[in-house]
Length: 166
Image (cartoon, rainbow, N blue to C red):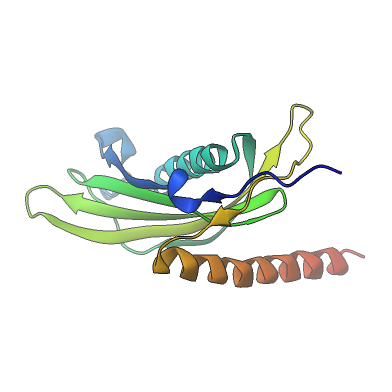
């Protein structure tokens, strides 16, 4: 029997402030940031958090609850925040929030949120067990509880899709 890896505090792998300066090649025809660009950066950062938490290679399993809340524009800086919300066996949920900040006005607004599910894999590409995440703050404890509700819904939807194919 393989022992469970020791649990890690959420703060061990959290990204509190990852700035990304918006440039011309990040903009669409109406001078707002491509949603795909934000999603790409978010996926990369979520992967870093997952790997920092697990000390293993982690791959994206799914992304859900993607919300583009407001446009980010030329001259603004995106600030990404990422955190492990909860771990289940070999999978974990990483929450991402993105804010757009304007240096001239010193104002910031929430522009994007999503939940990423990652799976840790071994050298053969097979899923492998990872350590639990220990929430420390009240916000982390809230996200920990809410993550389980989202997981139950994801599994329900996956089962409904599977059943509809039979």
